Length: 345
Ligand SMILES: [Zn+2]
Ligand SMILES: [Zn+2]
Image (cartoon, rainbow, N blue to C red; front, side, top):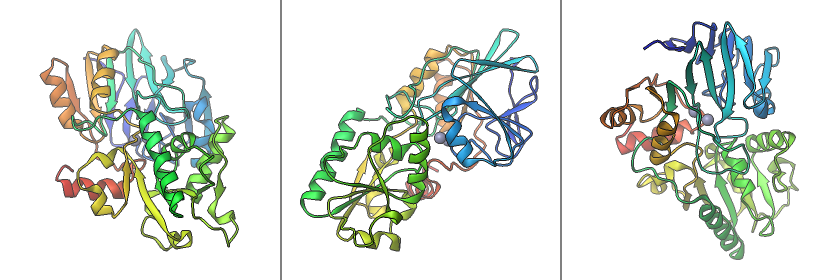
């Protein structure tokens, strides 16, 4: 079947339009699904991305690049290929990239999820002939609990820690997950502090018009600050580091889809796990594939071979195209630790 996309050493390439989609190396012209580092590489000459994610992308990219932003649903033609962005619901500004050329439609999902998230525009189904989907959590064991109950559990955990005079340290990825967690926190429980990487993301979200509870960057807090009862949002890399000492008695927790995996807590010596993911789980992935009505499916990231095999079994034409490039937004270290020890890497 003809398509609009080719696999190259620099990533997905559209020969008709002479541009790359989420290139894995610096290229001349990059069309970007979202601002996470494994999709948005610095060093490209020009970036085309969604308007909603403009502040995040500019925060992370070389400033001398040429940026063009499109509102969701708006079209731009390059070399006869009509490009448009459609909400992916993954993080602020995350988009599925739709390419159309002479009636043929390809769709690259980037990262996406179907659950509601107050910090970004919700995913919408897009029909296409050729679908390129992620499969970070493409195993049947991954099914996300109802998100409101998880947010409720986080607030209860925080309240309990406060009542015993402890700080609550909650780890999430700096851009996307942290802001989604923040949006669900009940600020009446206590003050909220942030790790530097998280605060930068929070600022970009606020500049983009997303309302988030008040936060204080830890380095700007009073050196004598008593953190008993406080919530501190930090990146997973801070776990076990000397940075944590200043918080006194504390409980630690991780917010990630990976916390569904057996034994992760003991290995990471954390007190608690909350299952919150910004990627599709198994059922949502199958639902999205169905709604796309695609004739040809490429599966990338994570468990792409399992997903491609299953899709073929149920009658689709699917292949894994996983290039095994590192996944920056999903905490490489954590995944490597968990996946290798689970024997699923
Ligand atoms: Zn991502
Ligand atoms: Zn990704």
